[in-house]
Image (cartoon, rainbow, N blue to C red; front, side, top):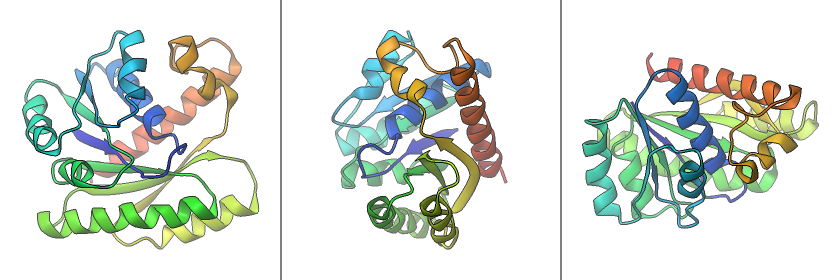
Length: 211
């Protein structure tokens, strides 16, 4: 499966989601590679410490070609898409089976999400259907009015599904890159709880993609 993680808003957990998804897929006996097309190269540096395969591709034409070629060698290709929603992001959306958009429950993030929604709609129109598109709330705080309002707003997004799974703000997730780990491999109850959250998210997203 070809999966793109997209959002133009920094700090939404895009690269963190890409790395954890790749690691989770590898635990499901999948051969997986991550394409890092984000200029900060956060995911590729992190994956190197995890001894997991990744490749850095920023050029939109090369990105368009390589997504398909790598899909012939790997069971899953995860693309950490650029924050700038230009030609590279379009190359991703014209190839992937599933686009996943992490959104923080804040007014600025909800406004920013409209840009990626527009780009996804364009790709769906060109491809006459694909990619499947899913949003989820990222770095959320439990029980807040803002989270509840964000869920209501995102539910109305045409062409997307809002996943029930939520990734909550946790220090253990923020600490993972510095420990050259993911929450799946870190000790302690906090890491275990975060790992369950990611597993639930990824299972839900992939099940949706297969419908």
